[in-house]
Image: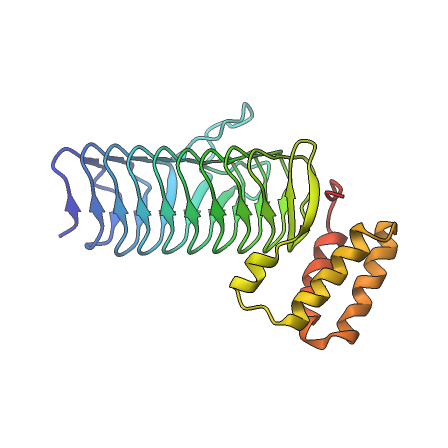
Length: 262
């Protein structure tokens, strides 16, 4: 039997795996589905068309699946999906998507999301992301795998944070942040390459060297963005081990519509 505290209110139409645990005074709505091994803390409210995967740990007082904070929202059956093995600390708020976008707010797998984090409608959060206390994502934001977002950071609507990037404490993100970079401040500034993160993930010296060359081409040689992209593309032949890293960076730069932090 599902471990539901007697004070919790779980709609009989909700689909909870028998191994799910629900804490005191939690409220779970009719369109919620929760996978095996997930724990839901006291006083959480989970509503809307929300799907939560396996082995997540959701701490007390979080609100997941509430309607978007968007005046255009008119009750459409949009969604929130959360993957597996995420940690969601106290007082987090994740909202449903909107029909003005893909209609789904997505959080991937193995993310570490600290207290008071807000993930607004239509955000797409990858895997292995760390978001520190009070980080705030406005609508339609994309966060790549292994990115780290510092506490008290605000990210403007439709911005993108590339994979393996790090955003420092109390930053104002109003431009796209390319993969592998470290940025902080208000106005936002690029400080260098996320060397600590890359080494922790066991990137080879060759790959890190190529990423440092990408940083130099973008930020240290006075090149236009197109000139820098041409130099970055050439690195794939020069450092075959870094071909995937070069492709990731070039793809990010090619699809940026809001400009990159420079």
